[in-house]
Amino acid sequence: MRHGQGFSDLEDHLDDLRRRDMYRVRRSLEGPQGREVLVDGRPLLNFCSNDYLGLAGDSRIAAAFKRGIDRWGTGAGASHLICGHTAAHEELEEALAEFTGRPRALLYGSGYAANVGVINALLSVGDFVFEDRLNHASLLDGGWISRATFAWFQHRDTADLDAKLAAVRDQPTRKLVVSDGTFSMDGDPCRLDELVALAKHHGTWTMIDDAHGMGVHGENGVGLVDPQRYSIADVPVLVGTLGKAFGTAGAFVAGGESLVETLIQRSRNYVFTTAMPSALAVATLESLAIAKADPGRREHLAALIARFRNGTRELGLKLMASTSPIQPVVVGDPARALALSRALEERGFLIGAIRPPTVPHGTSRLRITLTAAHQSSDVDRLLESLNELSVCASPEGSRS
Ligand SMILES: *Cc1c(COP(=O)(O)O)cnc(C)c1O
Image 1 (cartoon, helix red, strand yellow):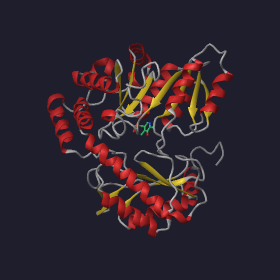
Image 2 (image 1 turned 120 degrees about the vertical axis):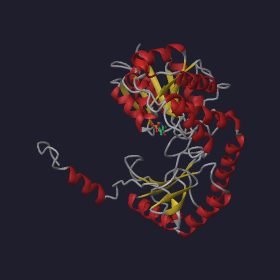
Image 3 (image 1 turned 45 degrees about the horizontal axis):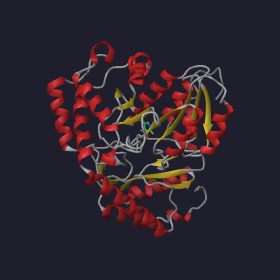
Image 4 (image 1 turned 90 degrees about the vertical axis):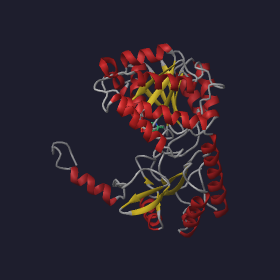
């Protein structure tokens, strides 16, 4: 595994991953996303998707997608700045700006592209980026690629962030504080009030990626960054994704006029990529309308989350401080996470084992996610199986 051997060591690396139970394989679904999915010809109760509102397989959104294709065709044909930008993109951007209470919104092909593209457009050599230790990979990659000076702060530890900001207080360059809104692998929310206060105190900007909060929490499903509470001065850069609660694909950045115009000029992941299909924008307009108008889905989901948490408490199972649909059960060791995932599959559940590098070493877990498509009885069945498999009998590796 040394330099000079070219790529002859790829197989060794793969073997090493297999030996350490870190090898990843993809499962092919044989039908649409939903409460139940078909895998290897067998229906499994799906407890690992990010389709929080159960909209990815919704027939109304599929119908809108088809209408969109009839109107706009399949491909956008070019980037937004050449000739790929359409009235459908424009309409979705306006709807997302209104939804988030921001003057403007800008579409990206994915959340990954948006996060890397935004941080890169805003920061350069000599600037500073401060990131929560458990931020999503795309936020970390954006920070590294920007060539700004990169600083971690401990997870949700605003005192640590405060100290790090104070240390560069006299530097006149740009400073950006970056955090997941709801952390993707732990399900806990960032301390938004404190982040906003710190950013104001130190004269920095705050960027929140609310990929898992949007559609799920707040008035009309607006997420953690409720515009009634957080102005654009509080959270100048807001990122949302469309492939999770909204059930389609893509992402957007919401913010002020000068932010969005800067991104259009300078964000490489925006400029040098083909626009998303207009039909996708049409479909997303439909899902946004459904998500906003249907609080019943959010209420049902909140009830399922409470039911799951109460049930696990009764079983003596330790959960993380999550009020979101992400309810991970940390088991520590990757081999144990894999074994549990397989045992649950035998009992009819699809739940992935999340291992490093997605999560820190020693914190491999079952990342259980609940969606509005689940029924109370599904949650009860899952609790029963977790109990039978003695998932709670492994305190080692669980963390507070
Ligand atoms: C899923 C996710 C992304 C990436 O979004 P995609 O549209 O899937 O590329 C970004 N940030 C967070 C926090 C996520 O969970």
